[in-house]
Length: 269
Image 1: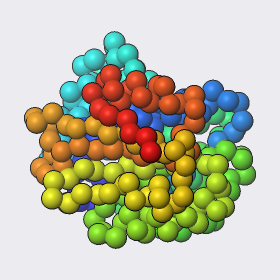
Image 2: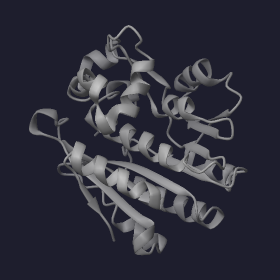
Image 3: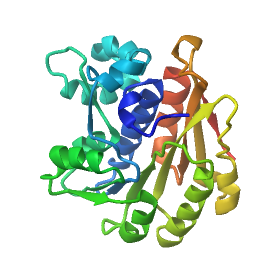
Image 4: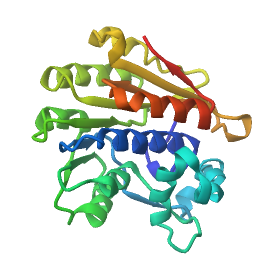
């Protein structure tokens, strides 16, 4: 199973897909002028050094960001995402990789807000060093699921919640389901983006969530990709991003990104 320390896996193929989807979704939501509150329930550090011992131990980034980095000058649908990575590496050499908190913070408009949640003290410290002085950013030191009760509904009236746990706990989907039930009661029209791995021998069944939450067809979208053989991460053979309340203006770009760039599949209810 995945280690809970994000540094081992930063920039791997799952990260590339997850963060490309995240950037695309945010840009689509920002086509409307009203402010958005972004909530990252399992933030991790904001920035990863791909030369440190954790990243070098697994070298998972080589099959992920390392594969697409050379295309950054002509990246098509990945251009915006790769521009965010390039901003951390101005000399052109790939060393630093942004986590989701840093990506979202970089995309904030003046009317937007960001709440980042993290349990681990060392990673909380890194978040404070990177983002603690940014007025639009709130760092919540604690459980991200519990934070949803405190921060929903958002004062901006619009919101995107990124849920990105490690899935080390066998009851993660059940815990997530309970948190989403409460979140949807408080903020039913919010957008919820859920990352999940696809692992041989331990299937994570996202299909239980729409029924449990009583979601109709137009309120659920599931984006899945399968890694090429050379990019598989042990027993992890693919990954997915499930959306609750996917914005209509984002459906086309997300479908195009998933199917054309990643040769993946888009599932509806």
